[in-house]
Length: 276
Length: 276
Image (tube, rainbow over all chains, first blue to last red; front, side, top):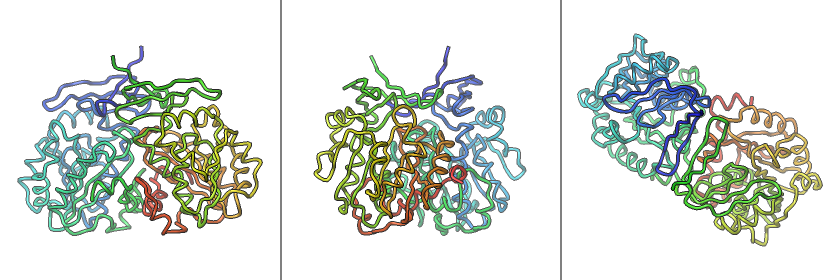
């Protein structure tokens, strides 16, 4: 008998992968969670039926949500990750030697525990002494802290269920306040092919708050359409520029390079239209 | 009853789309051919079970396989397309006003006929007086012509079945001979995530023949992994450079822009490794 996992990425379209083993399924306090093994993508973390990360292509997402903002900042010391319980973003953040403290604000403790158990390649950094793992509501945490962070990374699920508030204008206003005077924030902002309206709305909201707002892209095969966007808001430093070329060029990565940093902001014509 | 089309892009992975109508299925002399309607991607042309083109995302492939080589050439007058019976590449080629003649060498006449019937948005240019549509073997045509073309575009299916010869070193040698002294050729060369070995082999073969060889990328949601590569070999002009900025900037496109032309050659780290 063959078992296949199918993610309906829309009502009419999806991806499907042969399952070799179902390791865990659970209804947590916040979402449906599954860990499955597939031949094509290796082990997968699935939340509410959507692929969050796979061993084979996770490097793209985790490198690209982290290194652009961190490399654009001249001296990122204190970093906040909202969401990101699998630990992949943290693994990338601590590659920057300037970073002294990184706070993980993950609302669902089960994502952290099961990632440590089943996805050690991704969760590897969560025991690093620079990392402060907290099972808390990231929205509340951002609201309570002022002028504290150099970089804030919003590693959210899709804008349904627990993540809705992470796509709200009020949240971006609180992020602005939680950043130091030259802080930078970045959020995953879905697919230009699938969620163009959302991208335009986020761009509008962020640019009403931050003096510098930009969109960049990366190719993530297991995410809807394979093309993913990230919205970046910055108080002072232009994210297009690398603040410390030496630090950026020393990163050990499989997708990010300093050249790609700059190229990722060059948008296809139809995506330029979305952010106009 | 819901009908879904599933393309197994590998033995263990695929994409699946709800079918609203099956318009045509046929075993041609060369391949299995189907035309289906889907909500998500619009009308699809499917050859041997693989999505060749869809109304919703065809613009990426057709623009990106055409405009880079054509914009890198200062005066492309005579162009050959090997494959490409749907006509999408021709539609893009004739946007360049320098082009006086474009030959289509498609081995399967049924692809041309059915594209005209079912995909008029894509096949629209095939009746243009500058276009010479021939139902012939492109490999033989290339072999028989010397120093004739400014640009040759290889718009092939995957390297199985009728397209195997379009990925052979001998074919690239014959393309070199069929090009004028400053000619440029480009071929679709599959996905960096899925077909890394093939990309490396094509790069090696082409760079043994052409003084300038480069790889560039574009995001095509319905192709395996969503990230697609194109290999370009040039006798004189560097494809990274746009030869005629005016002509390139006047193109009416939805993906290609002169800025994206240059950015498309900036490769993620793991793709740089493939072409080293």
